[in-house]
Every structure is written in structure tokens, then in C-alpha cells.
Length: 158
Image 1: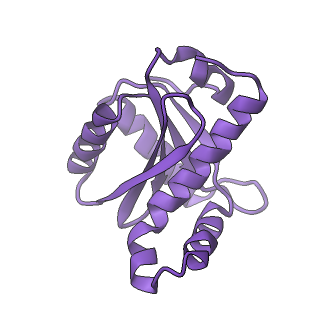
Image 2: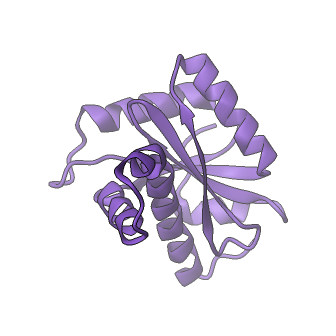
């Protein structure tokens, strides 16, 4: 499915469906899923990246399990707002994913989301090893919570 505006995401959801956010790392894919009321983001276990088809199959299974109706992808733009190779890679992943997962998707500027997620994990006194295992899902939760807060402030309802 084509890219959708953030504001239109909630309108396309059916009752009981959730939103998911994805943070694409080089080694893992972080996932977070909202509750059905679109209030809170909940991190899910990361998907260890292998090959694209295996990654998308694992992602589709998780999205189906959580009754996801739309996907938000964290877009890693540069600090000056330009898009570099990582942003281009994320857009390519979204294009390829759209041919296999028929859900609307939108992009969200993820600048500093990993930094914020890491600080939150450090505040929880989490070891460096555990932080490394959970950082992408924590970043996805940070991205998703930003989207949910924006939808709430815009008065979006399902």
C-alpha cells in the first residue's frame, strides 16, 4: 500500500485494531505496538535481521498477532533535515514491504529517538548487554508514542 499521512492513519483503522512502529536497525528490527485505544506504546521483542523475506515474514506474523491496522516507520533523517543513505534504505524497505504486507504505512522523523530510548533504559539501570538487545524496540516505542500523542492532540478517533 502507498504511504499515508500520519493524520489519516487513525481514520483507516477498524475498531480494535492497533498501530505499530518499526525502528530498522542494521542487525535488528525494533517493533512497538499500541493498545486498541491508541494511548500507549508497548515494545515487542526485536526481530533479528537475516534476509529480507525472512524479516518480512517474521514482521507480518507479529503484526497479525497484534491485530495491527497500520505501520509507522521511523525515518532516520540527518540533523539538518536531509535524507541520507539510512533514510533511503528505510524507504526502500517500506516499498518492498508494501508488496508483501498490505497495511498502510507512514514515516515519522526519528531523530534522537535512539538517544532518548537509551537514556530511558539507563534510567532503569539496565545493563549494557540488555540495552543492546532492547534498544531498537525501545526506540520504536518512543517513535510510536510520539505518533499517538500527535494523533491525540489532533483529536483523532477510531
